[in-house]
Amino acid sequence: MTHRLAVLISGSGTNLQAILDAIDNGSLDAHVALVLSNRADAGGLQRARRAGVDTAVIDHRDYSDRPAFDHAMIGELDARGADTVVLAGFMRILSSDFVRHYDGRLINIHPSLLPLHRGLHTHARALEAGDREHGCSIHFVTEELDGGPLIAQARLPILTNDTPETLSKRVQECEHGLYPEVLQWRAAGRLRLTTQGVALDGEILPPQGRQWAPAVSH
Ligand code: GRF
Image 1 (cartoon, helix red, strand yellow):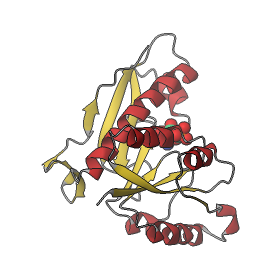
Image 2 (tube, protein in one colour; image 1 turned 60 degrees about the horizontal axis):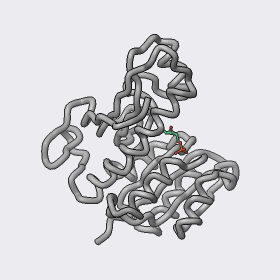
Image 3 (cartoon, protein in one colour; image 1 turned 180 degrees about the vertical axis):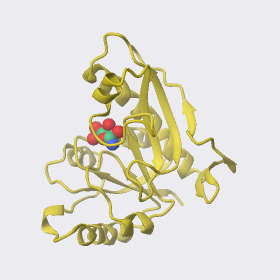
């Protein structure tokens, strides 16, 4: 049966677009059962509608607290039978109930080489720290913010004239290549979270996950 993805967004949805494009060109054998946003004005909703994908908006401001909001999302996601829940620029912190409910099925992409630069403004922080490289990380989500077991990372050298904007652009190109690939591992049943760590094709990956070398322009 085709692997069913639910994609959670809050913003422009360029990662969602990369996922939809990969499905369209056959490199990702999955079905996006739902795109869910906490904001009605998220640009990614238009991308989903254009691709004929079902959308839902659950506005966190309509709920008294985080668990209530998260339970509303669980209801919607489970009704769609999502095999994997994909966070793609979803800007709300998830409750432990939500994270536990999707244990081993919840994946996030973060624009830094975790464990470096958890949280926001990662490109500026990588530059300020004088890092020599930067990139993005994909990980299973656990209750620790931006802290779950790493699946894969794409690394880029930081160039002397880089700004947060130039860096962000190159990191995004990496994200758009890496996320569909990782989701294809999942769709093909190759990727699992085990008690020993992240397993790809039955082998436990190193703590930093699979390292991925993108072909990007500088
Ligand atoms: C990406 O940089 C991702 O790493 C982070 O949020 C951003 C989402 O961008 N979690 P987009 O909405 O997919 O364009």
